[in-house]
Every structure is written in C-alpha cells, then in structure tokens.
Picture (tube, rainbow, N blue to C red):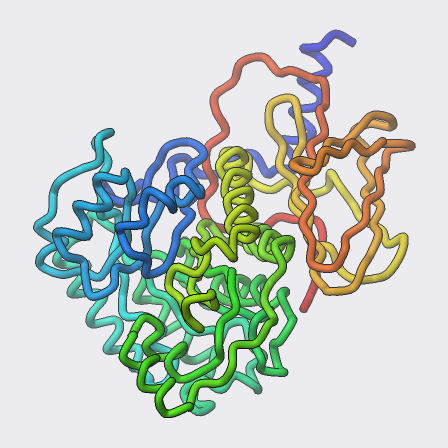
Length: 443
C-alpha cells in the first residue's frame, strides 16, 4: 500500500476517533482583542505577585505572564514589564485602563484583569458582590478577559473544607462565583500543607481542576496554581502573604509556626503541572513564595541561590510546555491507547494527541505509590517510543510498551508513525470541553 493510501486509511480512522468536526475554529482568547496571545502553541505560564524588577529573570525561566501586581498596577510597574517583554493580568484601576503602550512586537502589556483573590475563603465575599464587580469591570473594558481565583476549596473533600467556617456548599456556591469570570482558577498546595486532610495528596490539584470544570458555565477557560516552595500554613500566609508588616509583627509576637521541611519535589511539581493539563487546565500560575535563607516567607524564594535546583526544574517544565504547546492544544483522542497494571494498582491518567506523523501520550502517576503499567496500541506491532526529556527510548513489542511511575511522576511519550500526510489545513484549537482520555482515575 503506498504512503498516500496508508495515510488516508489512518487519517479516516483517527478522524472518527477524534470526533472530527467537533473541534471549533479559533483560539481560546479570540473574543478579547487585547487578551492573551492567539499565536499557535501559546500556553500561559504565570507567576503570582512578583516584583516587575525581576521580570527579566522570570522570562529566562520561561515565564510569559505576571498575575497580580502588589499595590498596583502603577505606571512604573507596567513600564518595567514592558521593557522586559512581559505581559500581565492585574487589578483594574485608572492607571491600567489608561495605559496603552505595547511590547516591541505590538502586543499589549495588560492582557487581562484580576478580581480580588479567593472571595470564597474567610471572610466571605458573597457571589452577588463578586458578580457586580465583574460587571463593572467588563463595562469599563470588554477587550480583556477577567480572572477569578478561588480558594483551595475545590481540591478538598466537601465535608472537610474549612473555608468560611464550613459555610461553603460547593454545588450551591461555586457555580454562583464562577459566573463572574472569563478565566477561572484555584490554588491548592498539598505537598507543603500540614493539614492531614490534604497533606501529600498531589492528586487534589487535578481534583480541583475537575471541579472547576464541573461548576463553571460552558466555555469557561480554566487555569490553576502550582506550588513550588515551603509555605507556612499561617494567618499571614492566608490573608496577607506579601505584607512585611504582618510577618514582622507575627515574628515579634511569636505567633507564626516554624516552616515545615515538606515541599513538592521537582518531579512532583512537574506531575502537578501535567495532571492539571490532562484534566483540562489551559494555563499554569506558579506560587513562588516560600522559605529561603533570608525569610520564612520570601516572595522571591525560587530565585534565591539555595533554591537553584527548583528554579532549574521549573525552567525545564516551562521549556517543555512551550515546545509542546501546539500538541497540548490538539483535541484528545480516545480509543487509541489502553492501559493495564503490571505492578501495583495506583492510577495513571493520560491523554493522547495525534499530529502529523506522530502520536503523543501524556501520562501522570496519580498517587504516591510506585506502579508499572503496560500501554497497548493497535497502531503498530513493533517499534519504539521516545520518552521526552528523559533520554530514554522504550521498545514496542506485540503492540505494547511498559514503563514505571515512581509515585507522582509524569512521562511524556512520542511515537513516530512514519506516515507523513499530504499538506492539510492546520487542526484548529479546541475550546474547553470534555477531556477525551480513554481512562481516568476517580480520586
């Protein structure tokens, strides 16, 4: 069979599996003229409440977005970001609304607005009040999306979430909050948490993303936060994390607990990022604050020399996200891959992406226990699988390959099909919708 005919059969089969025609044209942010980029492969990679003077350093680490500007935005902050080629989502004020300077390539500096953080936490801001603010912001500027970030609540079990003294009822309250958003996010840091209900459960990052999708109106864009450091579970952390006064007074009063040594390992940070994407997140925001030699709660913790290993790991993850951006944006295919247990029963979540001449499989171990899995595919009986970023190649034998997952660990696979299709129109970016994976864990 010649190459063109082989590709015809292959593409027809995959078209049926992909649900060809369901993917919608355009990009996620096309509704906002001054919103985030619609460039192919763009993936938002943000940092939370960072000083614009560090924008060059963060850009070198692969960050392309500042989310939140402390006591701003001010003209000086926006100018610093412009000079560094960095974009931002920030609080809407008169300064930012009037600021019309652009980056060198013509893109806007301000690409979105942020609502006040965690309105669902204590003290509670009622949903109607959040919605009223959202409407006023939208009226002032309809050309940029508005981000609403919720508390860790979506990643907790309903009966144990302590936010608002237990007054939150997810099915009642979260849909009411999420109406007031264009981009919905949440933050949970389970690997550094001392709270027994979530401590060490990295899978709760994916659970929270699932719940955001569950409670959001159709078409809502989902982002989420990722932990990077040792974060003390304390009053200042929860309410005024960047207030030097709060931390100074707490230190004098001896009211702040010692910072635990627990934190997400570099491989777990990577796993949290990829499980977020598998479950439907379209943007990552790193929470950088944490312990350093100069402070128990340093806003620049990840940039400190003692955290060089972690900065290197985050930089590598971001490089990965940028290199695979166009693949991430493809709709997920079902029916191409199946998984069976070889050793252990810890779940592994995965998604399959089909592109020109190759297939990508993004897989993440969803529990702390080691497991080994066999991946079955009917696409080829013999061949090889490249494990991206790990300098490994696995054999495909009898239509299957096997790999180990050391607890919370992500593996990204590429299978070269050897079939090069004739030129076709680019596959459009799919709007948020069902994950489309063949199998998913149920936390």
